[in-house]
Structures are given as C-alpha cells and as structure tokens.
Image (cartoon, rainbow, N blue to C red; front, side):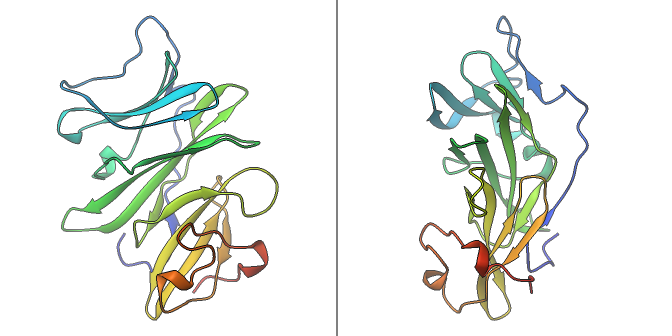
Length: 199
C-alpha cells in the first residue's frame, strides 16, 4: 500500500445496516473496556464523539445519544488520535475519520467518510490512503457537498488530490516544492480548474 505516490481507495461492500446502530436502549459504544473518547465535535445540534476500545482494537463514531457507526480503520492497523475526527455541515453533512499507519509495512494515513442522508448516518465504501497526514473535507466542485482532499508527496514535491465521496478521482493539482505553496495552505483547498490528471 505504501508504494503508490497518490491517493487510492479501497471499496468495501458493507452489508446494509451493518455499520449503523440506532437502538437508543443499548448502543454498542464500547466493546472492550476501558474505552476512551479521543476526539469530539458538534455538528448542528448533535455532539459527535470518536470512541476507541482498549489498546485501539476497535473504534466507533457516536452521534448524538443513540446513533453509533463502526469504524473500519482499527482493522486496517491504523492508529487514531485527537486529530482523527473532523466534520462539516453542508448540503451533505459528513465526518472524516483518519488514522496513521506506522506498522513496519505501510506508512502514511488512511481515512474513511461517514455521511448523513435524511438523518441516517452510514459509512461510504472507499478507504482513502495518502502519503502524508493531511486529509480533509472541503467543497471543491461548488455543489455544496464536500469532497475529500489529500496532500500527496511525489518524487519532486507535493500536490493535492481530490476525490468525490463515492471514490471517483477528481484529479490533482500541479506539484510544488514546498507545502506552503499548495493552494489554500495551511487549509488545502484546490479550485476545480486546478485539477488535472494525477502524476
């Protein structure tokens, strides 16, 4: 996985209903004690928490009081931390969970996106891989919904790569020698016209 210079996706095919729990009487928030809330934010009127099991063996996104979505990242040997969660409110509200890979085999960052449609939260299929720690949700196409933007490291510098939330490649910006030359840095955001074929 660490040999590619640009973002790749891993399209899992989850069983419908398997990623979201909405039973208010017994949400499966913690499966191996002691659990820890490592990151939290607020989206609209809902508090959103990233809860990790003991030793990082599992993780879940808790949305409000009774909605729980399982994260696939611990199963990919990703390490989650305080900067692993970010959410955006837009025409399609979404949360990004990302974790670092440092297992002796792979390095970089993997991420997954959880979206809200008609009040129901579910995980999108792609798993995103980037060669740096920078992944974020920003609106690139102007349609009001977020895209995933990642900073990639190439042979001669850095560039941004953008993906729609279904995993479709929207293209990459030209390579620049330093991070601070990337569009929008330190909050990378390319204009749609800057996206060309990726290296």
